[in-house]
Image (tube, rainbow, N blue to C red; front, side, top):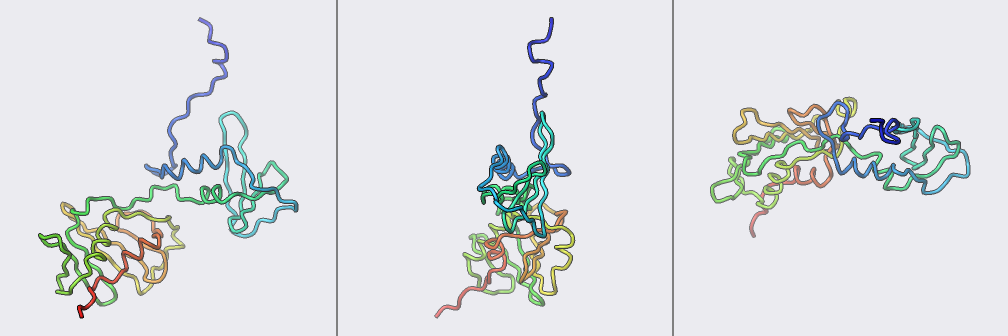
Length: 233
């Protein structure tokens, strides 16, 4: 039988989105990016020729039925220009944040909090080992009284640890002399996971993770919070 009308020009159905070189992707970030780019709209047009400063972000957009489009963006100014369009324009905040969002899967550690047997916190020459006793209270092997809320937030945060964004090798070359190390021992695992983060900066590493990363400020705050209980009056 002859092909149905238009069948010869039909495009193959697209498969699921993938991120080259990675097994998983941040689906919410990807959905936001697609929403921001389809269609790509200008918040306003620039009357003068666009001037893009340092740190220009370049995005290549390819479609099934048309040519590719190059988009150049100055994130600091929100100025942008398409390669095939002479006029520059300003991006809205949603489009810019979607273009800058981390698409690589950001979950570093995901485990039931009950699997965490102990956390060893090394700050300089001081070691604090935190476990949970049979009654569910957090205790320090060194005998120090602990702030139960802060210790619980530490365990909960490490059980569902997520990066804010990943770093290249240059950004993570030196964590500094004042790095804090958290060694996480999980039930059933032979090798503890070691999280190292700077006391002042944003960079961090986790054993088993291929890239260094930044943590959100709230996450860093829970990981670095003092655990000692306030003395009773």
